[in-house]
Image (tube, rainbow, N blue to C red):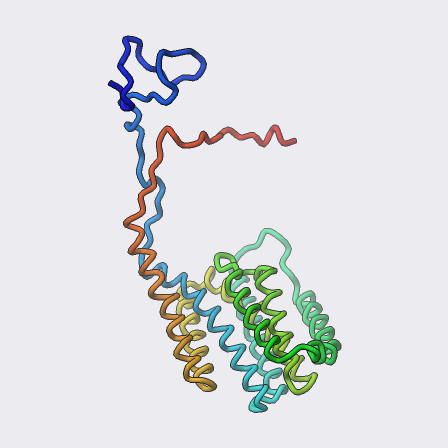
Length: 294
């Protein structure tokens, strides 16, 4: 008897389609499960390795918290825009120098960007941002404050969800645009045009340039990557705690869930994974077909 109850005939069953056989269409013999393969190519994760990679997610969440903290300080008049501008400039110069020092060790096949090209890009961005700051300041005057805050929260959430954590250099267009849109909405609620300019410059530093530097650090100096992520997370908690204790508690719980609990669940549930492969899988064409594409 076959596995499906069909009587075993004298003619042996063959796994072919081009000849007629005295078997039902769904007939298989006892050799059908001999080719069964379980968990083929499954990657085994180590807990602390996953925690290290999850640190990128945690630090990006902390970057959003740091940006909101800076905006709260400026809205309350506790942080002058000149101080934020000079601090952003110093951080940008230090980060640029560190990025150049790290990338100079790696040989690049293409032509590297020159310092003049980087200076031109920075000057163009700062000029346009400074020129349009009065316009951006009045961009949401006809929109209620609650709507602006809701749009900002939604866009920051979209930034975190769509951020390319695997390869964040350069940041994805969707996540970067969402973060800049939220920055414009929040900056339009600040007292003056200089505040708006300082806030948008800080947003570019936090959401566009910092991920590139951190990715370079992860590739070329992995020993310092974990410490930097921990420092950013601590800075986000302390900064948010200086404004609201409840926000700091929520951020701490979120960071603990993302960096500790989720990796634990991933490693824990990995042992229950059961993928099966066999002759029922779809055929894979392994031949190089590039010659047919020309």
